[in-house]
Image 1 (cartoon, rainbow, N blue to C red):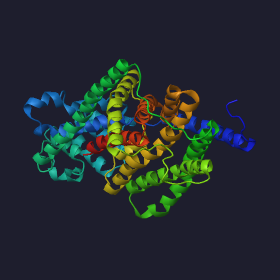
Image 2 (image 1 turned 180 degrees about the horizontal axis):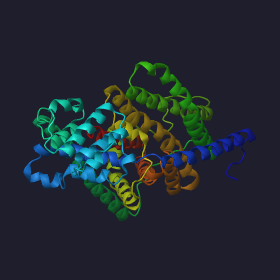
Image 3 (image 1 turned 135 degrees about the vertical axis):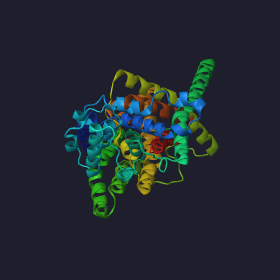
Image 4 (image 1 turned 90 degrees about the vertical axis):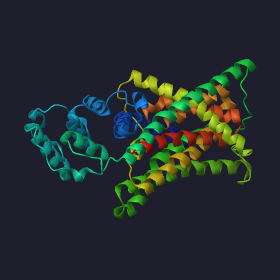
Length: 453
């Protein structure tokens, strides 16, 4: 038997945890299918930045950065959805960027908008469609100066000068953004591919992979079930949010919605981490009847710190091409994939710097540390000890991908999990996989930050 010499209460608790986990995860995966994909918003934001940067892009480089007119591309993308599916802003962008002047298009369409400023704008567009010579005072559009791209579209539609807002310096800033957005992933893929080929060649030449010694805790599979199903899911994902959300709502009445949302995520993650980490503490303490921070239970192996960080960076670079390739294949096989992590959309549309900082700390510090302790610090070594290294890598990576409750993102997350596990074992340092995980989340966060206009 797999679970030999296990007390009945412990076995019962594990069984109940597995059943609850099954229902929680299957419901979470089902719900992910109803969440919109953030990839469309990311693509649109990139096109908006490209349009705002046009005047600063050197002539020789325009063919590389502006293949097709960005506004036309946005309008084409929006037209692939029914009008009712679009957000109010995108409905407006679709109307403003449309080259049709048929009055029927705008008839009674203002009824689809709740925003009074948008309703006013629709009325102005309708007047323009009825009389092509109609030219309102540009001051009427000052209400939209906070949305530079929309203001720029209005200047094209109503033929007024927007140079006071879309300045040369602002356009240059947008060009630097589009440069970073396009070049950083490209360079990462290029360097990562070379590094991955080098590692592969070295492995083939030596006819072995340089695994470091991996030390598992003296824990059984039943302990893993209680840690993942009982601690991570039941207590962490089901019970803890009740406390974290209630705590934030006590203070959220006097703060902005953006900050309130970020605080819920920040404290939600903290409260979610407490139960499984508490179980880890109890399990470690029960092994030696004491717990001391001086002992490296999980093989963090911080020192030599340069080596640990270097291995983390190498692991990140080597896995980037594979994760992006899997994402590309998924996008080609399935149109309009749903199920993006809702955190991505929150970061993309966040304009509050304090809430942005909280999200940054959560994604690049808390999440990597907590998840690496659970999945690569405890689960991977235990599975590798009982079933072999390859099986340990595959199973722990699958559970890691499944735990993110996003059906559309499972394949790339599974590949990322494999990369993190290999880095953990190849370097002999859990700290290296933490660095790698933090870099991955950080690059995603940086990309979303750059996409903000």
